[in-house]
Image (cartoon, rainbow, N blue to C red; front, side):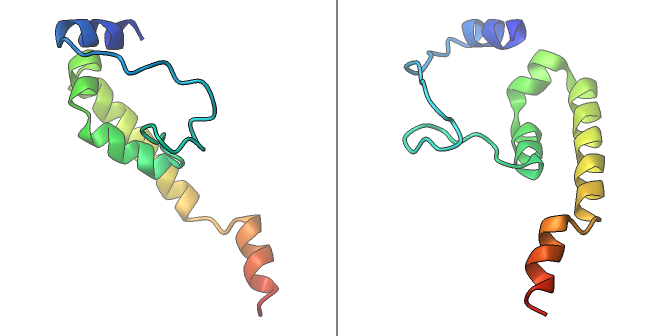
Length: 88
């Protein structure tokens, strides 16, 4: 958070108005990632993350997140079983 604050100061960024509420449901604000694959895509595009944390750290987090996503994607989840077995 300190790095993000310093990044904003150094780049002259202005803060949007304070938002109070559920960021996942809000309509008129930038949407938060709802799933890991969306967060991965955001981090891949983030020049700020590289400047704040360094490329090695960003690469490490991206690798860990991709491994986690691949593991998740390789599993059949209970919701899938219940949803699709009832159609069979």
